[in-house]
Image 1 (cartoon, rainbow, N blue to C red):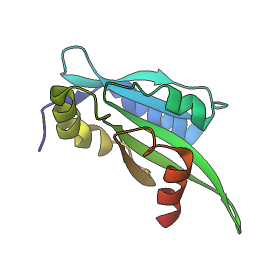
Image 2 (image 1 turned 60 degrees about the vertical axis):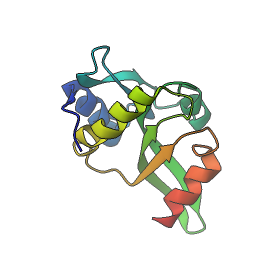
Image 3 (image 1 turned 90 degrees about the vertical axis):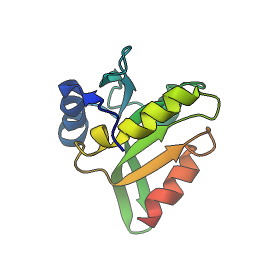
Image 4 (image 1 turned 60 degrees about the horizontal axis):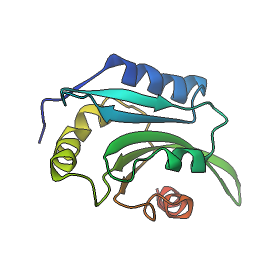
Length: 137
């Protein structure tokens, strides 16, 4: 299902900077005030931590995000770009519906995503929970 929401070109530009140039560690996306397009809300410095990222997720509103996730396996370091759909339980029903129906508009434009995480509370986006999902892929 599609909501007819567009994607601001800045969304893809920022993603390319994260993916190819490693300028950002994460990007947080939100719907515009009129709910007609997805736009970049915040980008981070390349030195940002996972905790910095999680602290930027609102407790009561939806967001999309990508995070350049680094982790280590016994045979060496790994990296995956993770796409997050953040839809906390206490966000408004209308916001949840619009974000759910608009996700594909953004997600399909972001080539190179290694894993997807759906988060409804902070336990689901805890570093260890994400690491476990990323490791399964």
